[in-house]
Image (cartoon, rainbow over all chains, first blue to last red):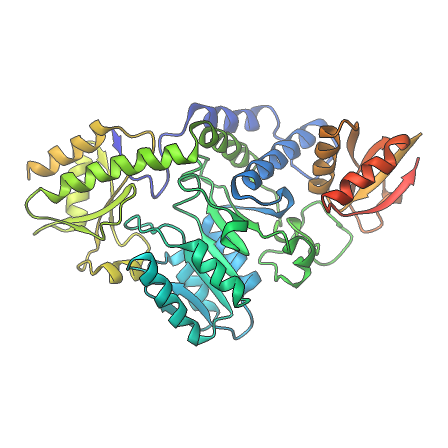
Length: 371
Length: 72
């Protein structure tokens, strides 16, 4: 089996991840933050250690890390917390539905063009500030084509204009260096199960330091018990517990902790280098196959393409028949597909992880060459 | 004598415990008895009162909020 659907979720996971998940289930299955017995304390400790790991990766504070089930929940929390009532939200034309839907549901939004060079993106973004957004949300790397947005420059402009800025790091966490401070971001949202190699069921928001004391103004998305100030009717007015209602998924969080450990072991720059090399090999190989169209050749380890005369679903099915896992369709990203001008039915996406090899890429190219 | 510093939550208590240990100050996170937790379930850290001043200075240095300090 050759797995090239790592933009959806990475697979296989490092062995340390499954060991950590298994240990959490078997050895410290208490409810973190609830009881004072040994098993609860052990669970709380691994949850806290994971907050530390995330904080060190994104240049923030452990108590500003809010755990969620995935990036979508994280983005819903951050968007609802930071958007102003009746305020317009500015997003890019590569946003996933995890951004588009909560933004569209909550009120007005506008879209800026992020398909050009960094300078062109900044020009488009600056022009779009005429809409007077009260919040900016954009991804760091597109889930369709590997396009990297200049989030440091966007964040600086937001900072200078006092506009809150949220980064969707779903595709970049673990794959690109990303800092709360260097991007001036108010919040970074990410899944645990993609580039950080954790288990599904983990995700997080890490808020900027300033919200540690100003969290009372942030609207909580979920209300419920969390073992803190339990005699009070409302959620605590501080991070992270303001946003953490209900039992946390300790096994998935423990797995995420181990996954981040693997990222740190390999190092983010090495992961970026290796995935880019595989992506380049794939793009170059596809480009010379007659009848194959590659969309948005932006580099990176995620490549979008179609084969003339065949639906994306049909191509994905034939690859699956040959033991190759890719994803077809619209990838929950209608804005991005419109931007890249893909046909009805979408396109085929192949996305690598650092655990893929040149052989995996060449095998996919061989199968497509035979068509 | 043992001192008790009340923290906002278990997360803050764990960070305080970790940071103090890194500075060579022994501290232990505990769940507070009801008499010290009027808002409901709360957490704090226990430490030797002789280390209280240094501990508070470390917590202030990293802007880690605490609420109540008692001698037990």
